[in-house]
Image 1 (cartoon, helix red, strand yellow):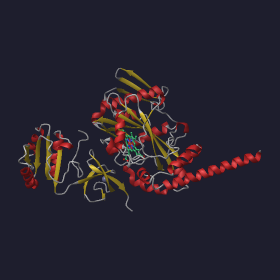
Image 2 (cartoon, rainbow over the protein chains, first blue to last red):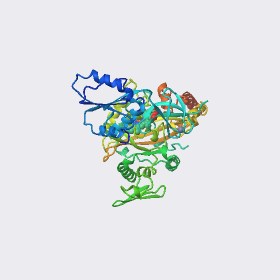
Image 3 (cartoon, each protein chain N blue to C red):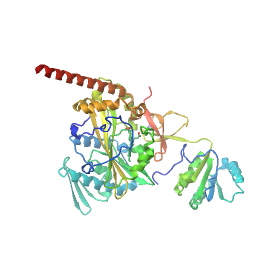
Image 4 (spheres, rainbow over the protein chains, first blue to last red):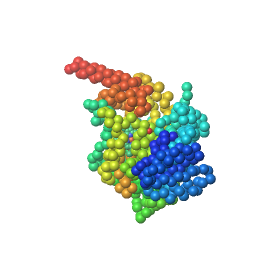
Length: 165
Length: 336
Ligand code: HEM
Ligand SMILES: [Zn+2]
C-alpha cells in the first residue's frame, strides 16, 4: 500500500515490555537472541492460561520462513516483535506486507532505536542522533532543525532548513 | 508580484469578523447556486498562469506529486475542470468530444489540448497536471478511506506552508498536525472538521476563506524556510504598506461523484496593505482583526516577526485617512 505504516522511533506499536493482549485468539511472538530470556519468562508466566502461542526466533538466515509464517496467520492473531531495531524493522515491514495493521502489532525494542530526517532541501533521508535538535544534511550540507512531524511516505522526520548565524 | 486589481473580485477575508476578531473555527459554509462553479477569470489570469507554469517546470518535485494508482481519479478531475470552465466561460474555453477523442481549447492563451479521454499515453503530462496548468488554482485531491482523507494528488504553486512533496500520502489529521487548531473556547477542531468533511455530498460543495500575511513573497514553504525566515525581519512600519500583502485563499471542498474523493481547490489572491485604503471599511476591519491576533497564531502563520510593524502601519494609515476626511469636511464648511 502507498501510505502503509512504517516502524519509526515513536511508532504507537512500541511498548516498554511484552504484555499479552487478552482479547486476541492467538499470539505470535517473533524475537531475536537478545530478547530470548524475556520472552521465555513472559511465556512461563502465562502458561496456565489456555491461549494459543506460537514463537519464532529470527536470525538472518530464516527470512524466507518468517515470511511464510506471517502470511499463514489467520484473522485474530496478535504479533509481538521483541528484538533489536534492525530485526524489528525487518519483521514489521514483512508483517505489514502480509496484512497486519498497527493495532495488531506490539514492538519491544532492545538497544537503541534509529531515527531518520528528511531534508526539505534535497529530499533525501539520513540517519541522525536521536538526541540532536539540529543537524547538517549528509547529502547536501544544509543545516536543519529536526521537526516533530514524521512522514510515512518519506520515512523520516521533517528537516526545516535554516542558515546558521 | 501581481496583486488583485479588480477589488470587486477580491475575496476580503474578514467579512464575518466585524464584531468579534478572527479565531480558528469550523467555518465551512454552503455556497449559493451561482458560486458552486469555482472558475474565476480575473485581469491577473495570464500573469498567474505564467507563474504557475514556471513553478511546475522549474520545481516539478516540489509542486506536483501523485501516486501512480490515481489515474482514473485524475481523469475525473480533467472532466470536472473542462465542464466547469466551458459552462461558465464559453467565450474562453471550449471542448469538442468525438467519442473518447477530446479537444479542449483555451481561447485566452490560444492553446489546444488533444487527447484520448482515459488514456494517459495520449498526453505528455499526467492528466491532472495537464489540465491544472490551464487554471490558476491550486488543487489537492484527498481520497476518502476509513473515515479519513489522504492526499494522493497535488498541484500547488502558492504555498502557505504547504508542500505536496512532504504532505503526499498523509491523512487529514497528519496534515493539520502543525496547526494550533483550537477554537476560541479551546475545542480541538481537527476531528470535528474531518467528520464534517465526511458529510459533504456531490453537487453541494462547501467553501471557506483562509488568510495570511506575506512579507514580500508569493509563497512560503518548508523547502525555502532558510530564505524567507530571515527576510521577514526587513519589514518596518514605513515599508509595510508595500511589502506586506494580505494573502487570501478562497477554498472549495468538492465531493467527486465517481471516486468519492474530496477535491480541495484554492484560489490565492494578494492585496498589498497600502491598497486597503481603496476600501476604507476593509482597512478598518483588517486593522481591528490584526491588532488582536494571539501569539500562537501569529507564530504558526509565520507573521510574528512583522505583525507589530504591519499593525502600526495600518493604524497610521487610518489616522491619516481620518485626518484627511476632517480637513476635507472642514474645507467644505469653509466654502459654504
Ligand atoms: C481536505 C482538504 C484539506 C487539505 C489538503 C488541507 C491542507 C492544509 C495544509 C497543508 C495546511 C498547512 C499545514 C502546515 O502548516 O504544514 C493547512 C492549514 C490549515 N487548514 Fe487545512 N486542509 C484541508 C481542509 C481544511 C478544512 C476543511 C479546514 C477548516 C474548516 C482547514 C483549516 C485549516 C487551517 C485553519 C489551517 C491553518 C492555516 C492558517 O492559519 O493560515 N483545512 N491545511
Ligand atoms: Zn539535504
